[in-house]
Length: 208
Image (cartoon, rainbow, N blue to C red; front, side, top):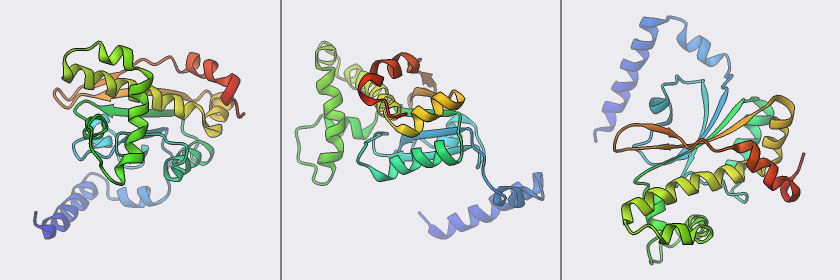
């Protein structure tokens, strides 16, 4: 890759934006009012704004390996807090994707160094759903199902946070679990009943 080409791409992008709106960057610099917090995977093939058709400023975005919401990860916890309490987003989306390298790596019997404690979160998802997953004989379909279950469990983790619980109570914030299919380009809504899940965990995790 020619790094200088990236700067040329930037200059071309600036001109294209100014051509359609000569105040584009003035508006962009004036502040952000996103309505969506998007938590996705760091995979280079899954570009958040592009796959959901949004422009800069329309979504607050956090990405990490395998789209995890880990309560001891100060990065994702800070993002959730800022998005809910300060930006006042209305929707929280956890988006995984099929063919996720993090999910596949978690299922390998290998010492992956610093990745071990991170990927253990996915192994725990497998442990919780072991009977269902082991009953799937096709390895590819088993990985696909683990991607879906991981999204569901991360939505649970989102709902355990005080900021999200406040948002649900005060202004009807909703939580969504999506999966992006790299093989077709389709974005799939897992149709997770977040309210039922919130009701299930409130006895133990209620913080509001």
